[in-house]
Length: 94
Image (cartoon, rainbow, N blue to C red; front, side, top):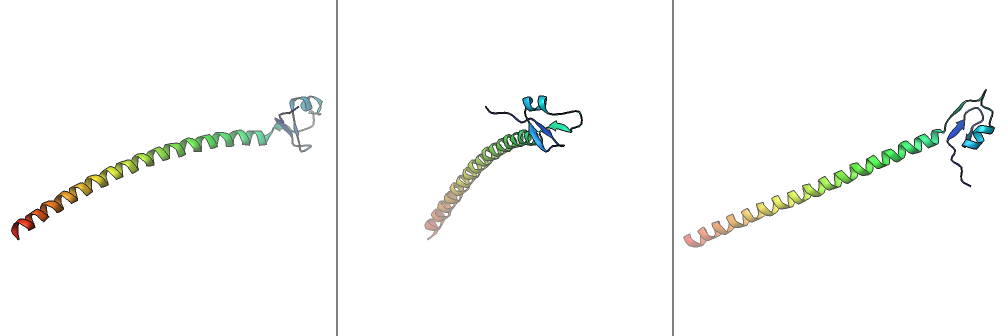
């Protein structure tokens, strides 16, 4: 059977589950919520936040890349058209 060690006795330096807490002397012991569990919960929250930020950043970068590609294609088309016009002018003159 798996026990969730959600308490920690700082006096004895041991983790305690709900059942152990009932058997453990508490009157002169420093019993606290298990810091590992609190840290793990906070860490999971931070991981979820980081995943969301990463996902948003990737979507933003994808949009920026699409926009840059569009601007590049537009500029290249304009340059090609200008080149053709200048080439035509040169061909007409010579």
